[in-house]
Length: 321
Ligand code: UDP
Image (cartoon, rainbow, N blue to C red; front, side, top):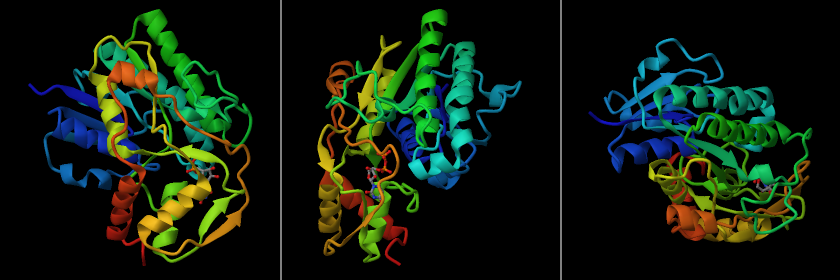
């Protein structure tokens, strides 16, 4: 019998790429649970009607159903369910707080029943506006607990604390991954993050909206690299209770990034300044030594190559019109 994995939030951007990889490269049967609040089962259209991927429209913040969605055993539960774009998590602030706390609690409880591992998607946002660079997993962060981003930052931090207590108290095998900025095909074109905004604007011949002076930095990891790290974190033994940064350590200012998007899209660079959002982190760059050591992983896809693939995907989905 095929082994099963459960992917909570598997209809989302990263989640759906993870589902593809688990099926295609590792032969798993996958149960996807998603309420399509920011994802869409359309991302998994190729699996419709297959026995290999089962899609369940449900909200993981609701109590788990008695029949546990018909899942009788599973090797890994991947908790990937949460809005992730700043504009989405502000719009869905209470839902974000709940999915990363109550939703994660349900994931942990369910995994314990099943004897499954948990891979918990956390975020570099737990570091807030960091005072050290690059950020190692030991850094405790510099986070505004009550600002407009706190629904995301603090619920992810709570989710980490909860997962670690389930590991300590119940011996649950939990692996926590802190994702830095990730990008690639299937990002929603209007999701408001810098990659979709700049790519869609470049393809429409519009100026790129640079928030603030554009001197803030980010480090962008292509989604196929990201998914490789997630799968390794789920498959390798002896990682219970480990926390691992997952991201690309190549750091760019937002202005440099705007130039690169225009160049790769083959359009002249035009920018327009807009207000810097409150609590926008000034820098973000992962130290990935731990991922290299524990997962044997480092990103392989250069930013220009990943951007070219993302631009092609946005073109194919009609971004230029
Ligand atoms: N940003 C920008 N223009 C945009 C969207 C975002 O200059 O149209 C900036 C934003 O202020 C931040 C960085 O790009 O400094 C990354 O923002 P994003 O929303 O992608 O995610 P974050 O890393 O802040 O969670």
